[in-house]
Image 1 (cartoon, each protein chain N blue to C red):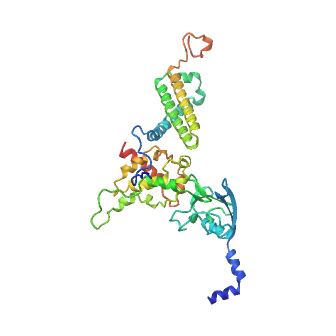
Image 2: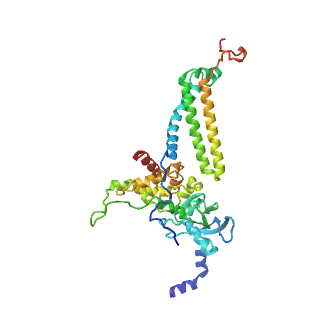
Image 3: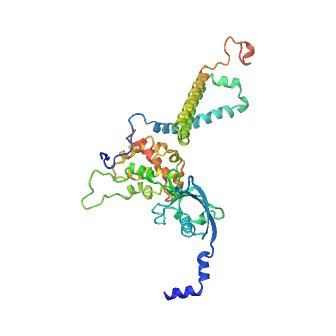
Length: 148
Length: 260
């Protein structure tokens, strides 16, 4: 008979712990990155598909030429990071909404995190280290515009 | 008394016919998701043919079934006029009040599907356990929090503009149509749900209230407003026409602008 009763109006769930409010910042990130991505993606599509010779101009040399310019390197890298994290967070939300079991939740979220991390690392590495005419390679492996 | 006797003697057959099939009435099929815990392991669908008028409500059809065909059909209703919020149910896949949904506003040529609202524990037929819903409601402290006493012998005066600020969210009748239409609430029972946020909004934006920081803190939680992903199911479901999603967005905005 020593049951204790909470004081009236005691909150049943404990107050939020101090620290970063990830749900809030996740929400803000989705909004901000969404707006920036609209500009980045449509700018990317416009430059690649419409300007100049349009879609027929895209080939190895076109990509090589773009990534010789730090402006386009950064454009693509920012697009890569924002889009992958935006998409990954969206997928996390789907898992929260639809996956019931705690194990399958953890497994799915871990796979999303791994996919996002690997793609970001790989993409960033490629954009910044891209070398269309590597020195010392046999000439028949190089694209035609490389002058030996 | 004598008049009634005379009428009954004159044409009982005609009177019965009119009552059984008044002019303009037709048969409609209601397919109801039944669940009687003593009998059923799983909910099952059962259909009933009911004679209704186009101006009848789904609640009238349910009454006819309960009173004339199957007394075991269980549902909640109190005022039957769209203000008590007892008879929210899922009608043709949408959350509505049975007492505000007219047969003619649905397609009576096809069967009408009626089931309990989703996301809350099913107790029997169309009755769910509303406790988790009311628990969320209690948590946002839905009462005026004020440190000072009102002026002697008077109420707390509020001007019309300040009252208008939260007018929309005062309309809530706690029927749970919004909360049980929310996909986040279906899978995550911890989420406060639209109705609790609407009722928090009603006090957060009331200039007589001093507890808005407390309520904003509660809704800034992991399971608070940030889980809302603006699917607008709640705004569509609300039988009172409250702009629920807008109210939730206003709470988010308050969280972003009032404090970090």
